[in-house]
Amino acid sequence: EPEAGPAPVPRVKLVLLGDSGVGKSCLVLRYVRGQFDPNSKVTVGAAFMSHSVHLPDGTTVKFEIWDTAGQERYASLAPLYYRGASAAAVVYDITSKESFQKAKHWVSELQKNASGDIVIILVGNKTDLVELREVTPEDGQEYASRNDMLFIETSAKTAANVSEIFETVAKKLSGYQA
Ligand code: GDP
Ligand code: MG
Image 1 (cartoon, rainbow, N blue to C red):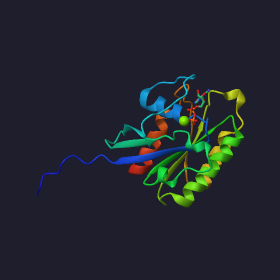
Image 2 (cartoon, protein in one colour):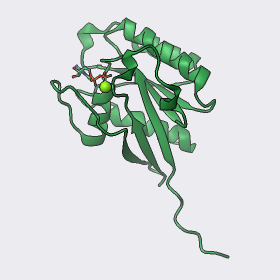
Image 3 (tube, helix red, strand yellow):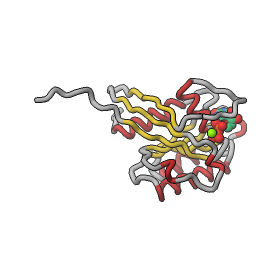
């Protein structure tokens, strides 16, 4: 019997989608670097950033997190962007109904063009702006459930639930049982 080596660490491409200004780049920087700069014109520079999630059952999932460099302003992202993605985080801003409509557009685009077994998490960002809320958590949850997606509300500003985006996706991908 050959001796078993360490289990390979699954590498997972996760793409961020959503309207410009919803906070995609801030979520990545908060998660990967633990920073939030309200004034920075966030530029991610690299095509993707890597970060690993360690689950309580010992499983490690290594994410390659792909952020757009502003291409989301144009009509559609090249399918090249989400080709080979195992997961997508579709982000909207809870203070903008319009961004929620745009998120639904990105979900249909993924349903048409991405891999059939892609794990999608719908992310309602900017929960710190409570008094400006236009999209209820129930609206988000209901849409996510109907489309077989995960759902979470976050704040890149306060860090609320940001790492949970990736943990939740990692658990779904690895078949983790709580
Ligand atoms: P992107 O275009 O989706 O990448 O959005 P950015 O990450 O560049 O963020 C757009 C704007 O929203 C910036 O002014 C950020 O400071 C702000 N922003 C991002 N996340 C949050 C958040 O959770 N709360 C608040 N209050 N502002 C945020
Ligand atoms: Mg950005």
